[in-house]
Image 1 (cartoon, helix red, strand yellow):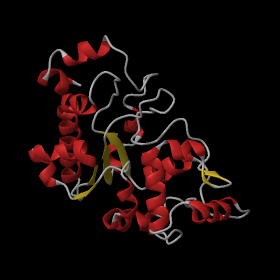
Image 2 (image 1 turned 45 degrees about the horizontal axis):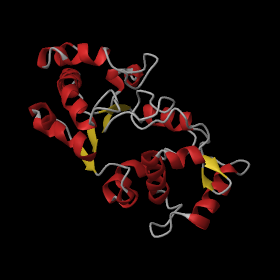
Image 3 (image 1 turned 180 degrees about the vertical axis):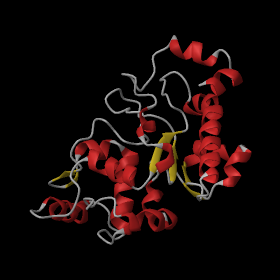
Image 4 (image 1 turned 120 degrees about the horizontal axis):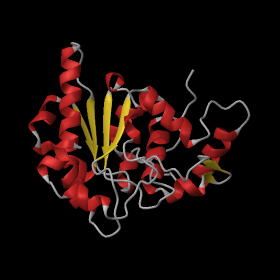
Length: 236
């Protein structure tokens, strides 16, 4: 926070005087992941623009409970466009969906298998978040807040010094332990603006369009990165 205040002395004061998401002290919820356990830093755009949905954890929609319905993904998942496309990408990577058929009967069949007795499929969004944390993901947004009257790119710019400080700390800690640096997973143009900081050159990177784009489902780089993790299956 000191880095944000130093770069823009009035930003935090102005922020405190406005309404923003997430609420309930969840702005820094992503940092429950111990920094020495971080293997990937996933950077999205900003919190969901709904109070129930904005959790402080990148693209984890607090309004989502069950992942599945009788016809495919649950209504709550389908409303959270980025989460919906991420799940479909995982299903394509796992061979459960063909990229040319990710809706309708195909999704219905996947959902029925996922909910069948004895299925290894996870059932709740909380399970997906646990699996990602277990793989070492720090799930951040480029902007830690959403305000209905402020463009996300503007808030994200104000948070860039904070992001730079986080990445600097992660890089120094990993190098101090003699370990590889975490992989930066950057989703969308706002996240890609982190390239402007020299510290990001030290990290391996995986870059993609934001998951709210349908093309994300067929992104071969994301399939290669996430496919082996088996995030939609219960951890042993």
